[in-house]
Image (cartoon, rainbow, N blue to C red):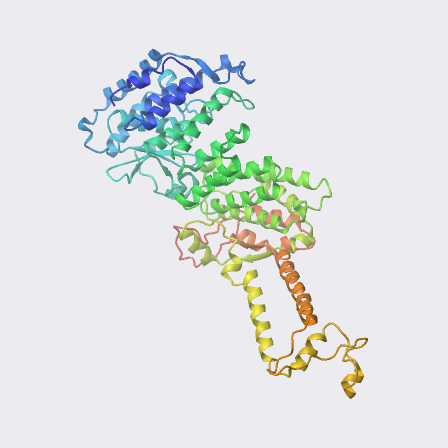
Length: 617
């Protein structure tokens, strides 16, 4: 790297948010590639100055001048910037001429340099340790910070092929001429430092959510800037944020959004959605649309392997009391997690689902059951269907995993929630048990999204097909009677509304119907009955019931749920019983799962036979 440019030096001393925005804009638009070290140091310095303990008490309320920042002098940033360059270049020889590509040995060596200069403590849940400012001033970094420091270090040494790869709770690097080589460079949990330098996607852990089925966000340099901005943490404590830091993060994310660098970064879009919900910007894309964009990005670029876009959206619906929509979003999140095997490294997403199941859904049930509204979700069978889909995904996540997921703490809230739905509501849900081979094929081919919405289409039983078949049948019936005399046809058509006159049938005299003077329509020369005003009115009256029937079919459409997990399949009859056997449901859910059915990457030699469950002690 050539060092800090004059155009960037001119922005110092930094006194407000607009100066920071301009610095990032210069780097994103004018530089051949953004200087990760410089941007991380500046962002970290601003964050630290506003969230450190000495300033925490001053930042709880919205400041008088919300865009002002503590003065950041150039010499402070330059000293830290030079220190980082010195650490890297004194330990690893730079890439002269920028012609060669990084090797696994070089990536490992850079990660060793970062690792060995840290304090001997783990900082998994500590805030504000993700930037190079924290590294250079306190020798502390969190998991993401180590990975980012390695990428920034490789950039400092002149290796432009080393890039950040991000799952939803982990980070590693990709490198090489084609960018296909992968390497662990950081830690996750305790005792994983020995993995540094190893390739990603090997062993049992490759099937865990931590590695997102080898569908991580592979960053460009500009997306790495988005990663450092997304990692900014405005929190002062558990309940309050530093207003200026949150505002800075929001403005920087909008800058990256406008430049198109968030398009393939679902979590960053979700972060921006959260910030917009708290403090919406006038004229900007609303938060609910941003959450939809995050989901669309995950589906388009990552084969729907990411969970958090759905939980972001579900949280938004929950906070805005859109409970029906929240149930659907959480069920969609569960459809993603079913693609994985649970492992102890998946602690973060486990806690996310546990909170939804044991806190958020029970709260919704408490709110909805406290009144007598006709629109309560407890009267909606589709909400019950989504509840079953949510738990079905979690049960399938557990199948074949070395560690069980469900315990009695999961079972009690589920039983209480199901009991809130009346038997007649539960009976309106069509529960279909999926075949194990179908589950295997779906996993092998990727995502599960919309898995229950296409059931009718796959089986040819959707509403349009039903109406079409009824229409064609009526047409055939109509054609089969078209050989009758036109007078008989007219008489037959009128019989549905009026009572026939017996005298007319026996003697042929008078009106054909009781209490009427109508005569049978006369036959025209072409052999067809004449079309009178009365016939037109009758046809209109006949058309109205047909329209009403179509609307009734649409309104009475029963939701269909396809169960894929063995536990939920075996619970089918218990779930639909008029009187719930809550004890049996609890016992069945907490039985330790040893199912080997339909999980990717496992032997199929067992023929799909499920061994007996061992009761959890």
